[in-house]
Every structure is written in C-alpha cells, then in structure tokens.
Length: 245
Ligand SMILES: C[S@@+](CC[C@H](N)C(=O)[O-])C[C@H]1O[C@@H](n2cnc3c(N)ncnc32)[C@H](O)[C@@H]1O
Image (tube, rainbow, N blue to C red; front, top):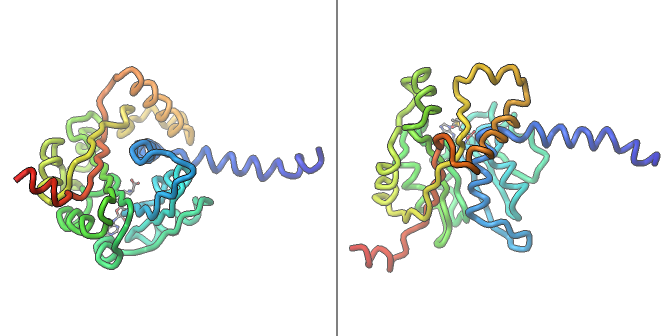
C-alpha cells in the first residue's frame, strides 16, 4: 500500500504526459499510418523516419504503436528542442535539413512526410530524394491537406501565401506516379475541422481530446469532409513499370 502511494505522483505524471501527447490532427495521421503498416508486436518494422517532424507528435505516436526505431528530423532547432522535451518514448531527434538527410541516409524502411510538402522550398526534389532513400520494398507516407475541405479553406483565408504546393487529389496522384512511385492507398482522414474554430478555446488544453472524439464519431458515421489525405507510396517494381508501358 505504501509503495503504491509513493508511486502515485509518477503514475499521475505519466498519465498527464500521455493525455497531453494526443495532439489533433497529428495523432490521427499517426494512427492512419500505423493501420497501414499493421500493428504486430512480434515483428520489427525497421527504421522509420519522420521528416520534417516539427515537435515530434507523429514520431512519438509511431514509436508507441510499432516495434521500430523512429527518427525525427527538422531544420528548426527550437522544434527539435521541444520534441526532446515532450518525449519519453524511444525516439531520436536530429536538427537537419531534410534534403541533406535524404542524400546522406539510404536504405530507410519507412519515410513519413506529414503535412509539410506545402511549406518546403522544393517539394519535387524532396519526393525524388525519398525514392532513392527508401530500401526496395520500403514505403513512403505523405500527408497532404484536402484543398476542397472547409479546414483548408479557413487556413488559406488566413495564410494566403504559405502554400507553395497546393494540389487536388488527382493532381497529387499524378505527381507521385510521375516521380516513379506506385500509389498503394489514398485515404481521407481528420473529419473534425479545427482551423479557425474560436469556440474550441473554451476547452483549454482538452481541445485536442475533444477533436479526436469528434473525429472518431464523424469517421464512424462518414460525416463531414476529410481535411487531409494520407497517401501510401511504394517504389515501382521494375516489372510494374514494364507492365504499364
Ligand atoms: C507545417 S510543419 C509540420 C511539422 C510536422 N510534420 C507536423 O505535422 O506537425 C513544417 C515543418 O517543416 C520544417 N521544415 C521546413 N523546411 C525544412 C527543411 N528543408 N528541412 C527540414 N525541416 C524543414 C519546419 O521547421 C516545420 O517544423
């Protein structure tokens, strides 16, 4: 009884960390990626690189859900500092330019580019480099905003100049295929709109949990519009390419 009481503060701290780490929409992205990779506690999924990782939310959730070795890369030293600060999971974070990283590192099992192509200086180069950095049979997961969703429209109204790479779903598919990827799956996610919803501030720090619950219900009932697409890409096998030409 006494030892249980002494452990209580640590348990509460761990619970608080866990609740705070469920960020919306990043948790939804990570869950969609995990469901594609397949949760298997016995199988080692290899090296998964999340780049750019921002403050590491997706990397953390991947590390929690899969037996793997996760690395988060971001050019912002401040983002990487916060990622280290918020992470108790077994994830390694590194401050680096993703173009340099993808040239330097090869044979990666899974690469994730989450909601970031739109703010990169050269999205085409980043995707070209992904193709050479993954091992044969490896996968790339790209998360892009659905430009026809209310969430994106609200974002774009407030940030008209941010998007350097805003494409529709068919344009994205054609783009990845032109680079040399096979589009394995293309899934709409995150049906709870969050951008510009001022009412959420009354929920204080619980708004992420509220949106996760709202998203869960809307997904179950197919309500609302997915705000993002999670796209799984695989390297074209030489035989596939031959068949298509
Ligand atoms: C919109 S945030 C997305 C971060 C994260 N994937 C997420 O979903 O929360 C874009 C991130 O790209 C990073 N970034 C921009 N250019 C980069 C580059 N050349 N190399 C690495 N990171 C870069 C920024 O520092 C920023 O953290």
